[in-house]
Length: 154
Image 1 (cartoon, rainbow, N blue to C red):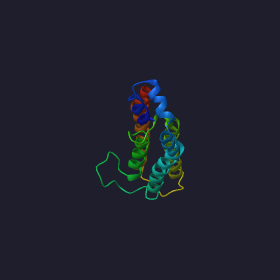
Image 2: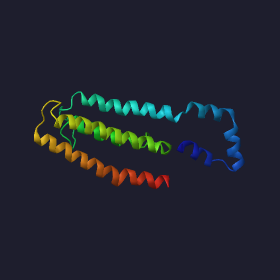
Image 3: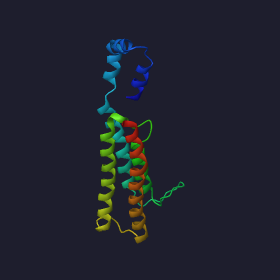
Image 4: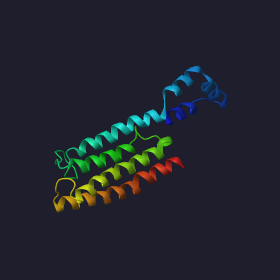
């Protein structure tokens, strides 16, 4: 947790850090800050937003967006949110990576259902935009976010 690391760096000596860590208030703070609970809250927020957008997948974007439908814009927003400052924690990298893959997999499952005729019909131009989006987001993610986060970790 970056906050604690930066706070501990303010201590003048190793002994000060040890005294800080042995203080009962420090233990209470750590006990209240549960990484699995934090991630679960983020997961529900991000995945819930995605699932909600799947209820109206053909709704056109009303705000300025490079995407035509709110579903595609929402997938992009959800993936970006996983890695956003203020959400992402280095110690949860594996979980945010898994969530990113799950979001893309959920989108792929929906897309497969559309292509298989299990969901309402889709225009061929719309299908092209979806495939274009998948390629764009994979390239964007691999090129910028993952590289920058790995640099910070190592």
